[in-house]
Length: 365
Image (cartoon, rainbow, N blue to C red; front, top):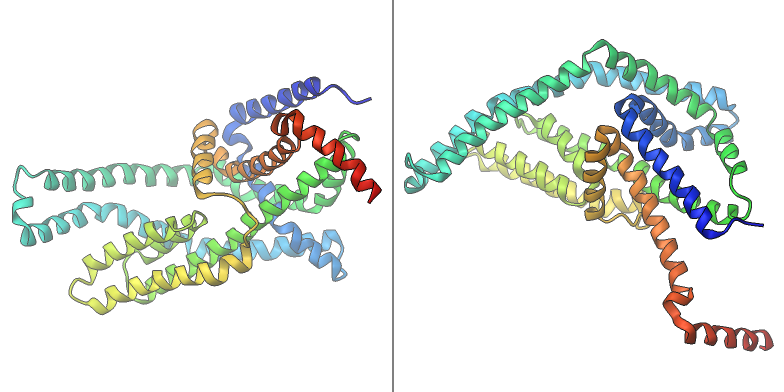
């Protein structure tokens, strides 16, 4: 006999509270394991495809790991140093950019840029703030990333965790399935299938879109000679999981830099505008329909809210789990709404009576 609903709700509520406490107290300690699990989840379809082609699970996992390590080493040696250098340079040049903008506005609109002008004071403060805060942020990130502990965690532990999770992924899923309450196993499996469909569409599909757009924006901006093109392209690609935000932020930053660098050379400024227009066309008409599809069901506002809440509560780890958790909550919410609309609370007594009368008539037909 199944447990009463109130007792089931109490036990599942306790389990959710314990999970939240674990995330709260462990924080960044579990970061390598979260990253390793995310990597294994993304690579599991590739391992399954290799298994269908005749490779064993161990051989498929080893092959994927070797290819991933080669790609990581190439990226670390060829791209990361340039990206870091351009980021530091962009932060340091911010006051000069503010000064150049001030000079332009002074020449065109002298009444706005006198000594007591709010616009002038704001530009000076913006430049100084970006240099101070941005420099501190970059230095903090670099010092943290270069510390021995974080190198060991991110370079050694994450690949090891990802390897073993990928190797045992199917067995872990089977073990979890064995632990499901028998009365609710079919419903849980159906919900898990929906969650997996949403996550795979968003994380795997949108992750591929982000990578393609980041490479496209960075390569195209560097080809036209835009300074800090690699940084701008990386930012635009990274933010593209929120519709239009990546294009607006990256495009605004790129066009602003193009005005300072190519002032008077309208062909190059137009080229930067065309790059982001082409990127939006590519994303909206090709990449997102083909790789993500329309079944994700994650609204941009919901994503921003989830990132803000989980980031505030659990830090960087919270931001990593915000998308999976918000996707799962979306699936559970839709399931709860279906149950609500099929129940007495929504239909009332009259609706229940009508359903009861309709059932015998359907059997007679």
